Length: 128
Image (cartoon, rainbow, N blue to C red; front, top):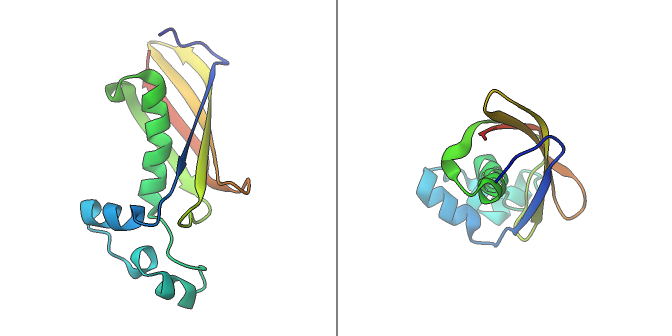
């Protein structure tokens, strides 16, 4: 696949209520804000929230689905800006901003179903 400046791609993922539990098992992050909805409410989060790195993984998967090869992703960075709740739908829109020296830079917009940016300043570098 040829990657060119200005190219765009999209993806989305619905967070099922078990995702934070699966992620906790895989990562060891059993913080109660992620697995106990009552605790999440008690601390003012409105319920259990998805682990930030799981949110980032959803965004990264959109990129690797687009490239067709997870090995092409060389760098990713972001700012975690809003919690993701169970049953939220995360939408990702990627735009290639630059292509040079065998690498493409991609900016991602990552929002929930209400349009809130859950990740900001998401920058990805992929091999072309």
